[in-house]
Length: 504
Image (tube, rainbow, N blue to C red):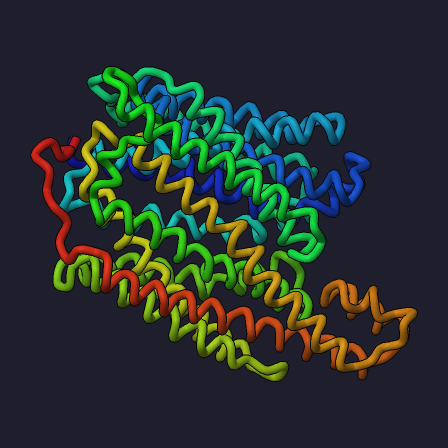
């Protein structure tokens, strides 16, 4: 049985990889989908946004459903739904059906992500969880380069539908392994359904996330994002108030167990996970654009160049357990944030002539820091969680992690965009081309190409590198703040619970 749990983990992580690749593969496939499905630019944005919003909306409910009906059962349903959604994407006859399929994938992806994390509480004892979490962290990031590389190859050599159909056998393999190796588990109290809390949390998270996505696309000054963000915050405040009221009613079961938040390791762990996600997304948002605009590679080449970051993260996740045993969660997390900050600070010194050796080294260093911090924070936070609370705890943790992605893209993306526009303003471009050239680095390079102006292209590239440097500098500052918060608020050693999960 000892080996079975690692086989079960491998199957679960394969499903996690499929969910992660689905996001990155889509970015490569968008130009093809625009032609195949006759999709407009707005519709293409909804292909991505529909998945993101469904994913966020289902995070907390999926964890609750796992605790109530069984985590293995929810994982089985989610894998079947993920396979069906992938096939529907491949054979979608219209953009509307494809968007609907993306919603299905978002719902299934949320359940897979949460059940994967909560299954570790059932499969592994507390002293083994750091290794399992390290593997989970690595697989979450392996999807980043694999998606564009695999997607680019498939789009070049096969029918575009295979980009999505490839998920079907992966889901079926995961399904078989889950059926065979993963034991069923659920909360012994069978919590009642908190319908009001579910609706408030889902609506609030969707509105808030949509506002962040809009801010990342249109900018904070557009006026389109702030009403959604405000509405989302208002709904989430109502959700917190409702949960507080429900917790005082005898026999009622709130969506979020307040006992979880009584643990400093868990509470500050999920807060630091949110904070860690912001600089991580900063790198993932800026560097593919840098590779494609400045180095002139395609999406497939961009994915290959992200390998330095991913290999660093895998190394860091492997080191995290060793460091944690000697230094404890608090100092290991602080070390991870600090290494990440150093890597990002080196990245913020890039110039147009920077070699890929320089870029690869700072990205690898940043990846090592990410891996150390991510594995330490997640395993430390889960160290105080019993298998009884696994679904809700994983749902809350994944919700904060997924909020960090659009937040990081909106905040650090706006810093890059503002710096790029300010640099371009100093050029005093002719009024006829200035608005277009300032939209993005790709638009600026297109204008320069149309005018046959190498000088303008050189200026556009410098403007983008300047914006990238500033964005990475802010990401480094956020990482420093994360290191300080880890030292101040995290306990050195998590408490052990008597009802801790035992190895399967």
